[in-house]
Length: 115
Image 1: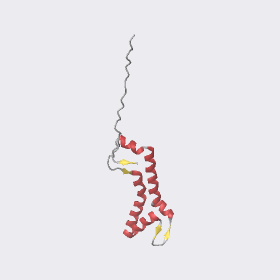
Image 2: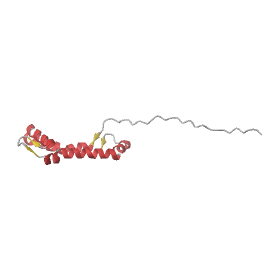
Image 3: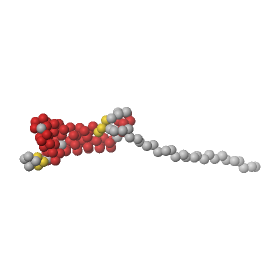
Image 4: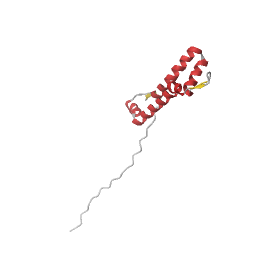
């Protein structure tokens, strides 16, 4: 008796090119912009009441808590009108990125806005 030939199939694995994510252009993080809103409103109200000097005073007091006219430091004012909402907006934006909300918005076709 003869030997029988056994056919073996060899699988050739071709490495697919890695998929790359391409940026779709400029996006606007809404949570970060919303964090700047209280500071902008407070600064604008200062501009309407006392001009550029009052607007600058309120902006500086909102970001650092220091009032250069009275010479006092009030961190609670900065946390309420300036740095508190800005840091909160940054944290919300970071959390949305970790949860994948921004990626879902991009896939669904929302063109310009991100959380």
